Image 1 (cartoon, rainbow, N blue to C red):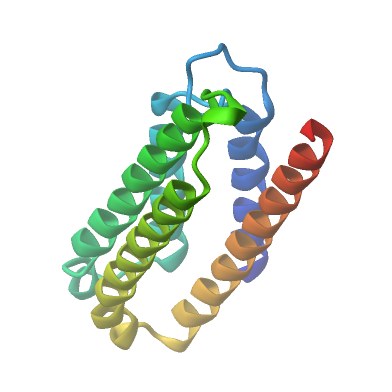
Image 2: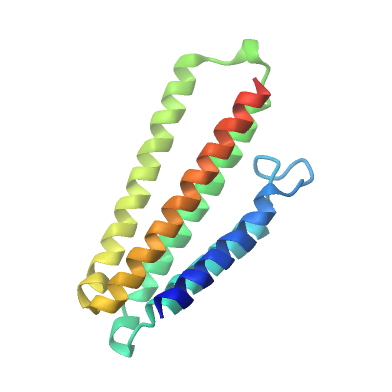
Amino acid sequence: MLKIVAAGVTALFVAASLPAYAQAPSGTAMGRSSVADWSKLTDLRIDLVKAALQLTPDQTKYWSAIEEAIRGRAKDRQARLAKIEETMGKRSDERDPVAFLNRRADALAQRSADLKKLADAWEPLYKTLTSEQKKRMAALTLFVLHDMSEGMEQRRAQSDEDD
């Protein structure tokens, strides 16, 4: 069963990451994906996690809070990316380093609050998961973290190329 979940997760992340690498028309968030693309990706990830966990009817009552927290994080991330895109459009001599530090602090505070909401939403459900469900959740988490670290590395490489 774990192999099936792993294969599904791998296929999802490969397929879901393709829109992020495709050339997008200008005017979209960070020039990469549209809001609709991000929304579809969020839907796919939510569906994958729910399917992989194979929740029981008793566990399903906790799912709506988790889904809401996931969607909230995704929405806030889109807003942060839009703000970065807006800031990047300014001429370099108009950039204010103090304002940058304040924007960065605000963004980190928002990410922290979103992550705390997600952890709080997961806690009641996690307590009810079987050991097999916890193993599947751990596998999913590893795939997500690996996908995120690859994405960060690609953004760093792209940033280095742009400089």
